[in-house]
Length: 182
Image 1 (tube, rainbow, N blue to C red):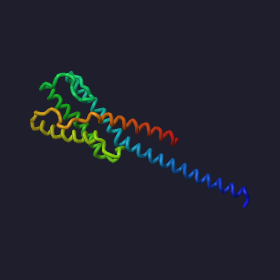
Image 2 (image 1 turned 45 degrees about the vertical axis):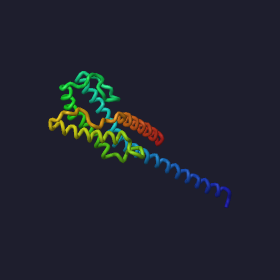
Image 3 (image 1 turned 30 degrees about the horizontal axis):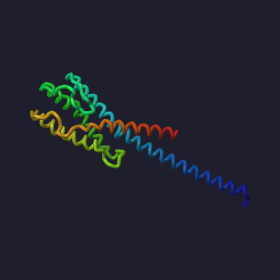
Image 4 (image 1 turned 135 degrees about the horizontal axis):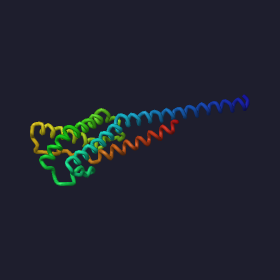
């Protein structure tokens, strides 16, 4: 064999190997991007929107009763509710806040397999527990038992931060992968 033939065979093999490795890397990036897209579209995007809408609705409720709220602690900064304000809160809870919570709960229930972490985040478990407790509270209200205003299990303060951070991290990774694939 001549040296030219040997070099041609080696170059062909190296070219084939390089193409194979490159295609494998591109395929892995595409698979990663598909997973990220699914996480954004089916879990973190809707979760983030639902939590944002919930917070905006809670702020709007407090504005209607002329009170401010510390959204991080979810406690009114003014005096406790009057009976009229409690009645208004029940209306908002049953017709605005609870439907948003149930939407968010459905997102979790149907798409929890898309959670990024190995273990279920505590804020997600706390949220589902809080929604369950609010269902009980609203059932009591429907029976005219207004002895309780808030759920026995509070809404998790860190759910919004978790949803926002996870969504933003995934969007960054999505954009990076798209850039790499172009």
